[in-house]
Length: 157
Image 1 (cartoon, one colour):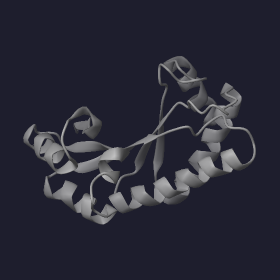
Image 2: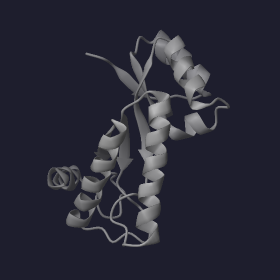
Image 3: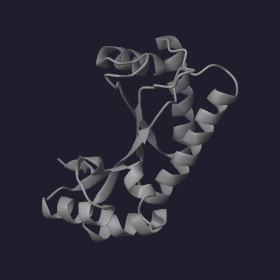
Image 4: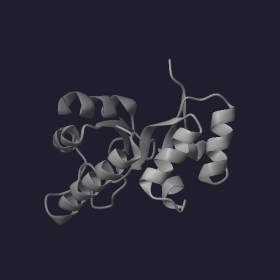
């Protein structure tokens, strides 16, 4: 069994977090996007720095405000953002992205709509060789319970 911890769980910059995580004996990290953005290295250098600590990036998080958007530019932008994240994930050497349930003010919600979005996202993810996970935030606008999140995943296939 491999162990992993979210970088958002620790204080300090990314290098300090990696030092602590490595010393604690973890195998990998769930890299929080802000830790990556705030560190002045390109994706390949971050990947190498993680590897130099004897760790792997097991997950990229979070991807927010994706599902349940109305047809049109907002939905198109959500899929475009996802593709950019998939490109980044490939560079970082990770194959799993965590999507948090949406808080988008224009969101329409609905389990069927969300499932359709995740089905389409899964098709795109497959082209990149990556996977998508889904977390129901307790404060999510529409999906805020693990049972609803599971139903979205089940229907998405």
